[in-house]
Length: 246
Image (cartoon, rainbow, N blue to C red; front, side, top):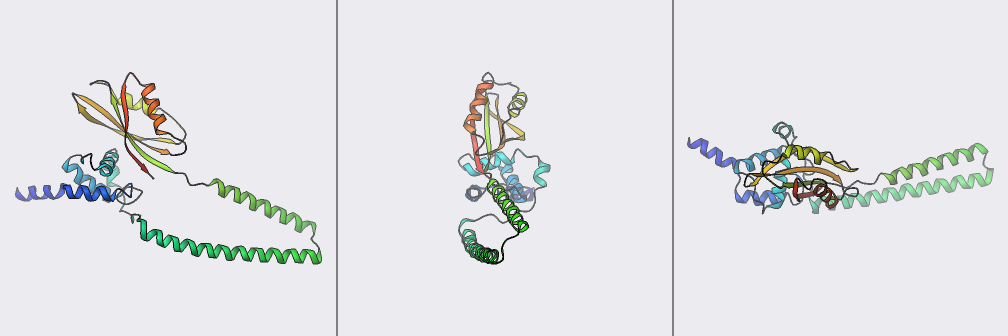
């Protein structure tokens, strides 16, 4: 019996652990970086054994609510953690790498200019055939199109948002309310399929829902306003629990 008690105590998180985990999540969405990993599952189990992390550890608390939306099977399938991103050293290496790449690009551009000058001199001396002119025009057109496509491939910034929806009264059908909320469609908005019902008090439960948004396309404030307006007879308030950049 003592061994069982000791094992349970080891699996439970301590105040120091909460502080350590909260600090780690200040730089990353998950313990393995940008994506959930087996380390997230292990930490989740320890937190679960101790109950929900205190809300004062905001990073850890938001992470716990988000991970809690996944099923046990989904969490068990998460892979081993990747190397988490760290500011200083990695940025230093990337800075050096960037300078090397710039030098290489400069040399390539110099070579291109030299080749173009040689071709211009050749054309001036011996003339340019109609086929040569067409080939050059075609190559230039393809190059311009490639540049335009490269400009279009702009990095899309996304965020994972966790919200709590509080109803007016106890006994309200939160499953139906969740279905209505998930029916809201917008370009750049993707709802998480799973949701959670947490007790508030006096027999009232709140709805915890998650989503992934494209930052330039979706305004969370506008979305909250829409939920409150469209379902004003069912929804008392909507608040953001966590907002993490991907």
